[in-house]
Image (cartoon, rainbow, N blue to C red; front, top):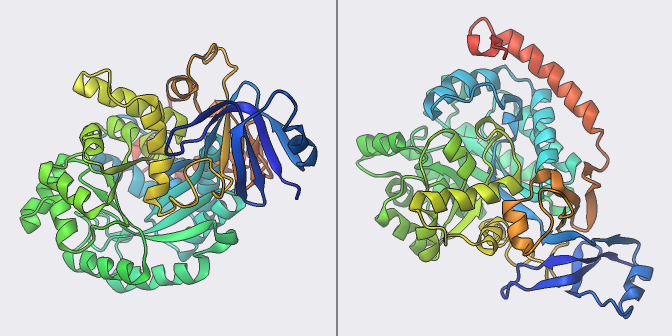
Length: 461
């Protein structure tokens, strides 16, 4: 049967033995990997080239499993760089909330499409988008439509808050759960299974205890991932202690929202007891190092989490607090942040960081059986990275080159389920320039609309 072949590259499998084949190959049929191994230079495997409908010579390139971006906010593509000097609370009040309330449904589609393009072009084949702006029911549809159109694989975590400081973004419990059910019915499993829906209580200071308790039951009954911002800043700890006499993770655990399908996003200000709860309940921590540095939120205890056996996945966070979604850039920030924080250069070797971005991300999504590594039987989500660049080559170790040298612009080929979605560094089937020009026109219009009430939108440098 004719298949697709990537050959003659450095194949970093991310299997349990961390096998690397140089040169190696990945052979796929339909949407599944059929064979991975050493590429024989004696011609004994040349029949695979002949019989493949698509054969890609990866000489000079690394071949890795698709990266999982375990936390982002795609709508924030319209918000990057508005201001780079505000703490989280002011950033929300003065930038995120005003601009998101002014955005129209088509804006959410354009922002999400650019975000999906950026994720794919920097090696992410899977995203978890935490969407919490529900000024129109068409907003979520726009984001999901962008995921489908781009060819990416991913979840939309339907965010909800009944107590957020911005009252125009509040919903009742009934609204949150009814509309999540509607999304499940319409979108869960769409695009041949590429699209999934999760539950996304926004955070623990913007959600009532009653809502959190109902969210726990709702997600259990429907077997959904629960994706929640937790302990991002020290102020958030103070809030739940004052309100409930409990720290963030203690509250999450007490209401029944902590379990194997829980994704604790950020988890910067967790104490020993909270880490032990996460370990016991087998939840995942989603680490967003660039955002935590950008907003000066603090440093998550990732090396300690690793020693405890906690699953730690990686996320870019939204473009409003990064300001990009370069998934390869996140790798270097992850390693360097913890080395300097603990003054220990031995922490987080490259293979460990890559595992967080691939294997651990797949585990967080409940997809360890078919994603996260290049092995026979797994989905053909494959990325190639061009190492023949002046800022990368010559190469001693491909894993080091990927973590410390490469950036999203070095991604050459991306396949999702065996389908080519990025080739030659460009998205397939999308007029990138046309999309970017449309988006700039809309952002300029939104800035003009907001400038009178929020002077920061009139600033030009």
